[in-house]
Length: 348
View: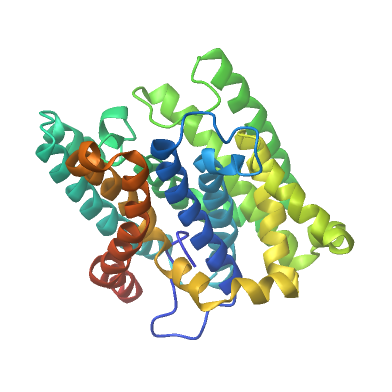
């Protein structure tokens, strides 16, 4: 499973993951982010806003799905290893799993920036490697903004998972209060409803709280699935209706709606046999396997193609070429960078 990447990596030397359908969903979400960025350069702004393809002008919805799914998978993995690993071992595995591919992708992004003549690349790379989440740091590889929060919050996840396991109602109450507080602060501090980078400590804390809510919702869903599966009880008799509803919610362009849509999609993928069977198609399982690599590298590929060939080929052609090139690059990155990180994290 990825990118809840510590104890949920794709099976290399172990049995097939119990949650292959979720892995495929993550792959589809990563591919959706790629399509979003390609369509942003190929089509006039706002062209898809009033069509069924509106979700593809909202790659952020896919990132919110990543956060909710990471909370779900990490909570499940932590509970399955209670008493078997220390916090330090957990943290080390997470960092080893996530950080080396993150840094190497940043190094590639810095190289393309230097080729483009950006003089601030060394300072930006230092901020990027420190995972500060500053606007300068994420400019090296814009999708990296979400990985900064993935790194931060995953290190808090054992404490959150422990609270959810022991006091689920208290965890739900704290999550609700945190949601209300961060929503107010986003408005009061003029951060906005669509935060990415943060150049001040205050803004960084508020934005981290926004995405901590996503992880907490995923953890609460994992607890529900493990014990009562009440969410599925609501969805079970209206599967197609809730599938359409999830798609619409993730097309609204609001993080809050995307959280709800993500919960519905995860529940459907876990319990609806017909959907699970389709999500286990080999091509979707392959997308799931390379999803982290695809997310890390696709924007750098797209940016480089624009810089080098944009005037000659035009934006539509660049967007078409970028899709297969990005998929190929992700496969190569997975084999030579991400796979060794997975194996290394398993040895920690």
